[in-house]
Image 1 (cartoon, rainbow, N blue to C red):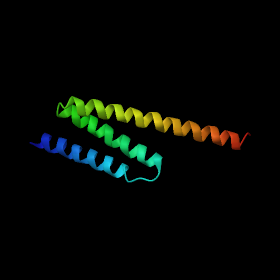
Image 2: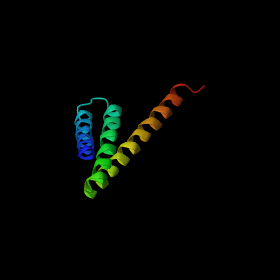
Image 3: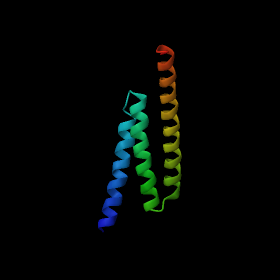
Image 4: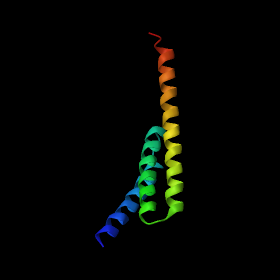
Length: 85
């Protein structure tokens, strides 16, 4: 019973993180919170043997990481153009 409670709490946590991420105006916060929610949903999906949930959320987590890296590289390139020292 206790294991099921923690799994259920993880599912609710994942849902809340994804919902909160969609309320963010800052794209970086949106991506990070959505990433956390997707990772939690991936673990949740594995624990309940819901493979479509796990695979899809792992894929979306990867998309979030890709975009966070892309944003970071764009910021670094912009910073280097503005400060050539």
